[in-house]
Amino acid sequence: MLVNSSASHRCLTSAAATMASFYTPEESWKMDDRLNWQPIPIHYLPLYQDKAKFEYVSNYAGFNIFQGMYALHLYDTLRIEHDINIAAILLALNFTNMRRPPYCATLLFELHEMSDASMTLRLLYLNSTDPLAGMGEPHVLELDDCSEFCPVEDFTKKLLHLMPENWEQECQLNILDTCDSDNCEIFRVIQNNK
Image (tube, rainbow, N blue to C red; front, side, top):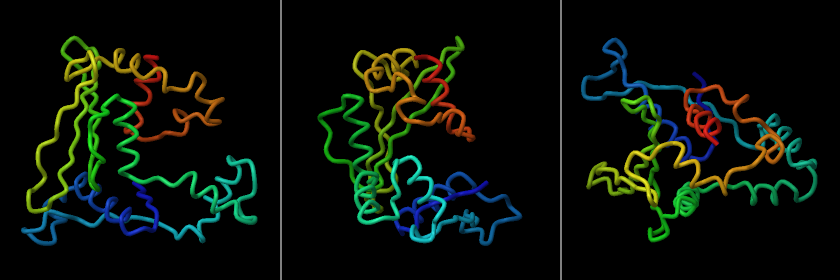
């Protein structure tokens, strides 16, 4: 397994916390009975040293970002803030009465196979950021005219207006060909049900 992160402390901490939750240690790996954690390497390069990433971005941006102020302008365009991403997804799903998501807010998209072999999505929102309050329980979010377990077909129909008609042409890449993890399964299910 290879875990990559940006060099920012926030991203490195998030990567470490995510890996700690995915890979609890077997007994032989426990360093201390009170600490249910094992180290997982997280790789990163400062952006100025990551030449391959700059070349990749230059290729898809259509201009050499090594020249002039191009890198700064492109960075401003591509910069991703976690809370803004969560807010954008919530708005796209028509949850318009919610406050700005706090840091550590999490949206969980669960893919479920029902007893009749149909596929459903369940959407959960976790917005507790108070360490003294503990993790808290995630809130179930139901899409308009959909139950807690929303059929993938219904979910897809509700979002068709946001999906590219021709993914390869509009995005100039095929995410399904480049996606090699089990986490990409949701993309495959949605793409196949369009």
